[in-house]
Amino acid sequence: MAEGESWKDARLVGAYLSGIRGGIPLAQEQVDVALRLIDQAGVPVRRFLDVGCGDGFLGAVLLERFPDATGTFVDFSEPMLQAARERLAPFGERVNIEHADLSGPAWSTALGEGGTFDIVISGFAIHHLTDDRKRELYSEVLELLTPGAFFINIEHVSSRTPWLTDAFDELLTDSFYDHQLASGQDVTRAQVAAEYVHRPDKQENILAPVETQCDWLRELGFVDVDCYFKLLELAVFGGRRAL
Image 1: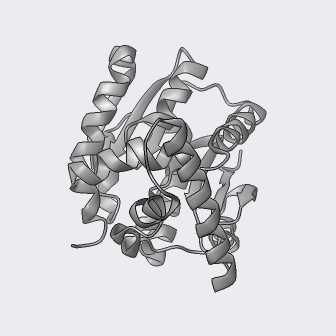
Image 2: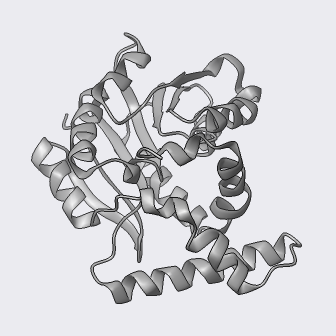
């Protein structure tokens, strides 16, 4: 399959939404860090953009937190977008869902002429792009931000050594296994490792060190850039557009 094409497969998307995302370690803490930073920025949240939105989970959190805000949700996977439509239906006209492919600059044309956004957020999406394209996308995101507003990326990043990669895989296996047991499923740890941690679509991941990605953001002109949370290969990082 071409880069990222696995995510057009409805079965893979269903497996991810039911078995993987719910087992991500410290997922709530990652979201809490993002919300704290958004509050600290002090920019009134009227419009936000969810880049590579999946089923709209992160954007739904923002819609709940900021009841006067509207959200634009962008993804290239139709099964994910269908899941987003279902999740976000209760928010009615506060939601705009667009089909767009992040692998090229034309994705932003789907956003129309509505102006800048008070938050741009992304969750576990950009790591499917080449490193050159990641950097280009970060530049495009900067132009979409209201001055002072945050870009926050909750992301899968690379480990510095194979030993650390193995440590992360063991952490994921334990976390997914516990999640499956708590959901009442009759599985073994080995089955969970094979199905979720060592699954074939992982070959499409193009991981980059969080330090390198933060350097790209600084070079592009973002301010207050940092990795705000990190647990092995799970990171929350980003920066703001200067005032």
